[in-house]
Length: 216
Ligand code: OGA
Ligand code: MN
Image (cartoon, rainbow, N blue to C red; front, side, top):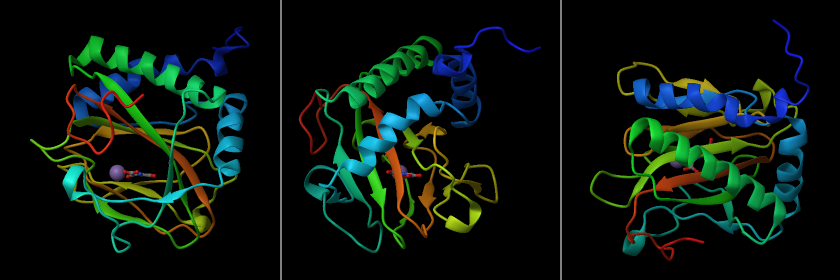
């Protein structure tokens, strides 16, 4: 049935129930069209305007180092003082509460950075957290690439623990990938043009990262 509500497309929280169900059942979810064009455009403009991307590292705390064989994207941490960033952080706060209500994961805070993969950049298969180390529980990636086609590469590949093959997703503007940080291996295939996203992590309470706690 066609909806009469013209603002339907502007309500990302309509995706929350499905995301929460998928996370509980299989440990990952892909919300296609999580943000509509009016919502992702300011984030895309911000991502492309940042001129201070820093080489990303791997590992946390004392283990943190740069490793161009594992990943070679550039990152820039979100700033609460920037309106586009604040809007995204607010929405992730709503999602945090929805996940906690349904799954009792005890998510405590959210940390998030823009990422830019230049043509040829990749991030090899990895987990975002290791059991007993770090405290990242749920990972999010919002994609910010208008008109992205298969020929551009840069797919996210998710490796569900029970599946034999990975599931590939194009990093299309407005789509949100979300998965359990300790349980779902994933990778970013080499992109053929610049690829923008916002990666984020819901964390449990505790200060084991290289960033101050709380992060913001
Ligand atoms: C990450 C990551 C996936 C993506 O930043 O840890 O795995 O599709 N990103 O950008
Ligand atoms: Mn990752």
